Each structure stands twice: as structure tokens, then as C-alpha cells.
Length: 362
Image (tube, rainbow, N blue to C red; front, side, top):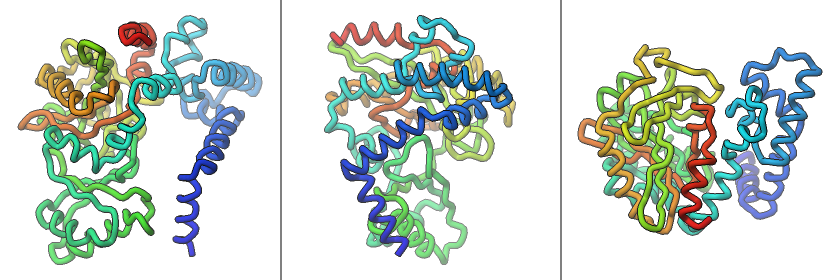
């Protein structure tokens, strides 16, 4: 019975009515005081007096309603210290970023990037590793062969983001490979599993030594956004992501550290997590972050500029790439990747972005 209700819930959420209701509920929840107070607590402002919280909430709600900066962005962009309207408006909100991307990218290209299985096939020249798609119980034989070949794999929901639902699976008993395959398939079966869109299983990436030293538990990747102009494709706001703790992913939403890079040299010049904490070194390993030089940086830029030509109708693409001993590989290609350097540097991107939009006639 629970499976039936899960299916109904998924179908409703995928309908136009369900989507509209969900957007209304999210929009309504985000304007309520308790949502603002939760973010205050997360950023270390939970000890303010009631009168201070009310005054802060009033300002947060004003910037949400008039300029579309979320409660999270209010603190991530340090609006609590940045008082002037001009300084605040230098930041590009996620709402505005999505609007720009939807205006410049073709909507019909979105599925190519949002579905990890389709993206792995489309960009196979850059993906450079074996993978196995799982969508129904009929895929158990295929996955069993994959797990027999690769004893350690990484499993991802096909449509996940921010590293959610990603985990590493190891074959510990050779005699129970089929049982392990069946359990993974059941979780990602489109008809009855918890993940409506299926999953993808990949061989684990072995990162190059300089990146492994930063945080060996996760693949520490580089996010490089490319923007295709009329005459050239440019690199926009690259940053290194470094994992924390026992997490196998480096995403900021999973505790990772955002490290903006000088686009010319590939050198880290700042480091901060999504709660605003600044770092000079990685806390667990002690490896220096600020000043870290990304190896083979020019190769990384050439790599994504070449990949950007595969789908020329998509102007803005955010590439997650990793360096292995054999060179750069593509982890993911994102249709609407975030520009997180604003959070790490506490400086807005509007000036740089406006220059690019002017070149595009926007």
C-alpha cells in the first residue's frame, strides 16, 4: 500500500497542478518568520534578541520580495554586514541566475544534462570511464556483470544534484554479487523504487595525488562554467571543491569547501563553506587551500572548451571535472550550475556578468 501512495505522490508532483502547488508552498514557506529564524541559527545568529530578529527578518523579507534574494543568500552574501543597496545589488541571486540561463539556453537541451545517463553517453569522449544505467528490475544481469568487473563503484540517482543520494558501494563477498546487484536495482527501479528516475553506477575515479592529499575520501573536483559568445567561448568563475569529514562527495551542500580560482593561473585565492566559515587549510588533512595551484590548469580549460562544442545550442554549461593520473575527466555537465564564488569571496558578479550579457546583446 505504501508503494501505491508513493507512486501517486510522484505522479501528482510531476503534474502541472502538483508543480504549481509545490512552488506556492515553497514560496509561502520562505516568506514566513520561522524559515528566516532557521537560517539565522544556521549562520550563528540564533542568540539575537527577539526585537533584533524581528528587525532582521523585516529586512530579509524586503530583499526576498523586491529583489528575489533568498534567506540563505542574505547570509551567504553577508548582507548582514553589507548595508548599502548598491553593494548588495552587485550580487546575482539564484533566481536571476536561473532566469538568465533559461533565456540563453534552449529548454529542449535540458534533459541532456539533467539525466546523468544521457549526459554520460553524450559526452563519452570526456567521461572516460565505464558506467551502467539502472532503471528496472530487468537490469540485474547487466549490473551483476558490472559489479563483477569493478569491485568498488559509485552509485548516483540519475537526476540528483548537490551530491544528494551519492554513495560508494564495495563488493565484499564474491558469492553475493547478484544479491548486491538486486538490492541496488530495487532501490532505483522506476516503477516501485524510491528514486523515480533510476540510477547510474560508475567505476570509482582515482584522482591525481595533489587532489587526493586535500581530502582522500572524496574526489575533489573543479567547477568551470563556460559561456559561449558569438565569436568565442569564455571561462566564467571557476572554483575548486574540497570535501570534508567522511563524505564521499565534495559539494558545498554536503559540507564541502568552495575555493575560487584565478581563471588565468588556476590558483586558489579564497576558501569558505556554505555557512560562511573561512579556511586557510583543509581542517582534517591540514593541507593548504589558499595558494593551492591546480596542476595542468591550461589543459583543464582546453578540456571544457572542447566539451562545450558538443552541444553548441547550450550557451551556459557548468562542468565538474577531476584530474586523474592520466589527465582530466568529466564528472558531470550541468545545465544550470551555481556560481558559488560569490559566497566564498563575498564579492558580487554582476559587473562581470553584465559585460558578458552586453556582448550577447542581452
